[in-house]
Length: 96
Image 1: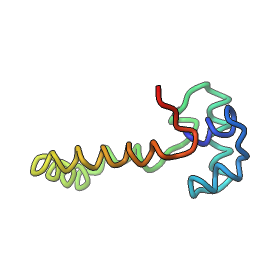
Image 2: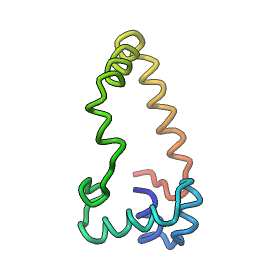
Image 3: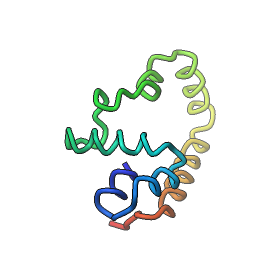
């Protein structure tokens, strides 16, 4: 999680991390607290993630995604490449 890394390891303030990720400072604090308490980047029970976890049970969403992937897999690959390219421009990105 970028916010946790920025605040705990790179010296960013919680306010600055929240501004860069377009979220509330309280959300950044929740992520940090969950990381400190569990040592895990994404401990679902600690974060009480109500959105991404429920997507796997949304049959309409799954059908739509499957249809897009099956009809044009190159489009999906291109989208994923674009996302990673954009993420690599964010502060804190390191080539490894």
